[in-house]
Image (cartoon, rainbow, N blue to C red; front, side):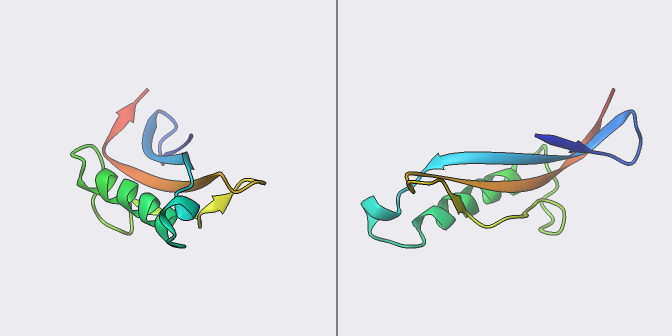
Amino acid sequence: MLFRSGDTNEISTLTLTFRAVSLKDVSGRADADKGIAYSVLQELQSSPLFDPDPEETRTDSEVNYDENGSTFTFRIIAKLKRPLKL
């Protein structure tokens, strides 16, 4: 998890990396894993903690698979509605 802020004593944006078990082989749908990433993004955008603007809380990567394809990772940049003061 990375933190970004304009002020050195404030955290306003989080970069979150998620790892999940791939469902594309089980479901038979090539886009099943992208659906998981999109669902996580939607949940964060609907949370009262994060900015729902798609320019502020968004994915910044494609789904990336591990060597054997059983898991995948994706990143989401999430802007907090209220920055955290350190």
